[in-house]
Length: 219
Image (cartoon, rainbow, N blue to C red; front, side, top):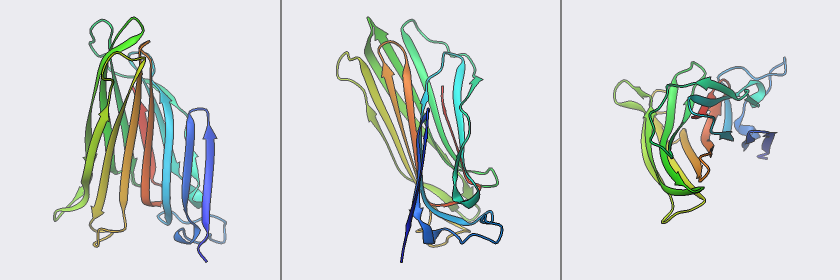
């Protein structure tokens, strides 16, 4: 019988959910832990990050740890290069990067948003997206399957929401069929009329392994 294991971790920065069929994950060893490199099944990771002041970046790393448990690292605030901006205009950058256990970047989605405000309202906003993915020799590895972005306000508004979406497929050394692995990245940025912003990022993994880790930022 297929059983479903659901792990819910609720944190101040957001909700991280990992879900997947238990029989897709390896059996525990005599020590009570699964060996590194074992399949943990389907996993969803999601979290909110506040946009920090100009010149700072909010960053968090989430790891698939022992026994396929999701381990959330602390939210760190680090310095970033200053960005030139016009009065009442702000820019925000997000990154959602999925790494394997060897710290090789597999797939990533980035967004760059600009918002103009006046009188506590958003008067204009826009967002562009970009991606990165790891390739292997012989034209193999990760590929971009599809991307999209949308959002904004048709007129002045209290807040403008922008979303970015990227789907990645894999065919290569670890799966020649192209059906086993798939990573989906989603990012939402809410740009407020008072100049603040909130970033929500999610990655869905068709299959995952102990040691894989997700790093996401909002700056």
